[in-house]
Length: 401
Image (tube, rainbow, N blue to C red; front, side, top):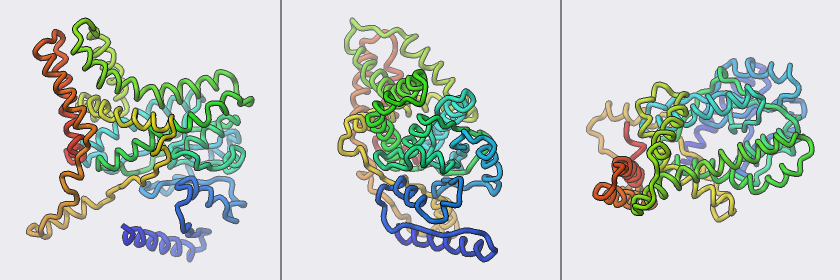
């Protein structure tokens, strides 16, 4: 891993030198430690002397591939609108078709961009910075208090603080940047832990700061606290998990409790269908997407409680592993030398996820009981959900094409 990182750094440094030799004002700089993780790196970057002569800062994660005209299309919105602090671009995914796991992620993120951010920008409501593929006005960053590493969502932290000082954000759906999705379940779980734990932890630390803020209207405070944080970042995960993975299975064991089919199936199905509008090409995967999101709601709920209680893993930062073109190179190597011995990257036991396997067993037993004694045929859903928990439990969701 360190060898690969060193090679990448050399490539970037050589590319910067190539452009510098053409007279372009470009510099290659790194820091020698990981203090503060991404927030620490961004804070350190803004301390450089040349930043004093800059008005804007553009941020990309390492796997993002912006088009050559990205800045030409983004910067004019900041120049001609002095009240805008951020221009956020749209993510596109180069490996969405790699496996079933990446297809599921594409569906979730397309909804996030197509609905949540598009609507938030169009209605001038608050929406969060995605941490990459965005251009910030440096004056807005400084006025908001700069980058802070108190949580693992430094992007959301800055966005909330800037919004509370009256700054506006703009989302451009046609300003698209290629990126990569994690294609292993282990990497995806770490990413989702950070994305769920961080907002809950930030809510814990900022709720009173938002309440006491005197620069924004009362209803904006209500929107940020209730809609953005409480409903979408905290309650949404808990409701999905508690209802579909705990309450509904347990009601089957108690005949006196009846859950109407319209509440358990019809209304949630309509809502989920509407959530899939961002990825019409994957509409045939809709049912499995529902089952997979129910599995992930378990991890998101767990991470949310860790963030709210600021427990042991609240500030855990694991860099999301991206395979890049590793799989493509491996396939090409196999074609050129089909007799080459196959190397297994993980042992089977390394893939096992006991939490998912435990819930798989629980749901299977509930399904068997409903099959024998039930009246609403919920065992069909329970057995399908059992299968999904089992697949993720043995760690093979990322290998299914």
